[in-house]
Length: 323
Image (cartoon, rainbow, N blue to C red; front, side, top):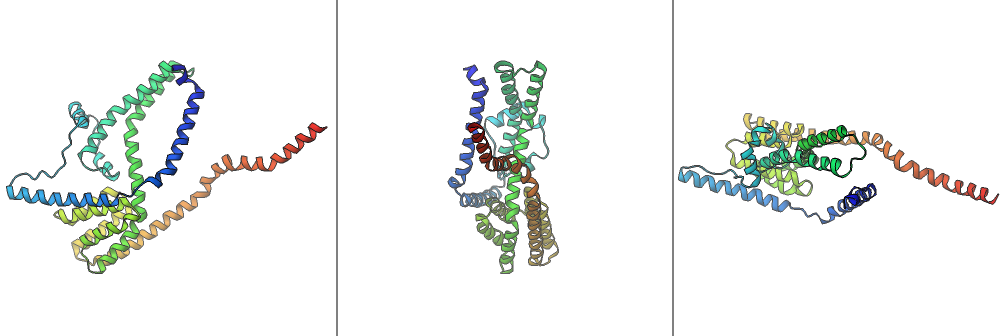
């Protein structure tokens, strides 16, 4: 079994099979993916009503409200016993997880748990394979260096995962944010309050970006629950971490503080965000020729040479064979 698992031909075949399976899943996943926007919005609305009910009950009893989620389980026990939150402390972990769409105490505990476990898992897998299964003719120091590299990669793997998730979420939000501002401007100028306008836009924008709809629904819940709207706007800016959205929240905070018309600020911010989206699209279009150079050289030119020179080579071969 060890010889079968360490055979390079079997490893190449397994890698090709994995790539083919990933390709099939990537193509079929959008067809099987169902939009869960309604469930997300319903969960946010239910959570808002639950917060209000618990707050009223706590005020009636005169005790603690108990509004926060409680994290219990294996991850929590391991993190608390080993004091991983202090050993692997990251002051920005809560903000990074919120930007990736993970909120509450449980994702924080899960992050610290995997940040502690993954280095040992990666090092055990790489070291066990290199020292016990197949050393590929490498000297011991090189194998030890690869094991240490796997240990380091395991330590930074949770950060890389969270960063990628936050980047994808930010791109989805930013792509639909100018349209959401236009809808918000229409709702505000029609006479709707900011809470009702945000809630209405969160329901309408879900077909374009579920992430933005979730953020706006959460913003509507925070605006109606927090003592100051400024806190809700600042929370949206922190969760998205985008300059365009930060400028919009700053304009909304200033309009709330100084009593300036909100519609005027939203109109200016909507135009600026549309210009930013257009600039980003033009930037990607300008980068496209440079990005296509290597794929064209690697994939297109060999095929082109085969199509052009193939018949001539076959004809020359036939002529030499006949002569």
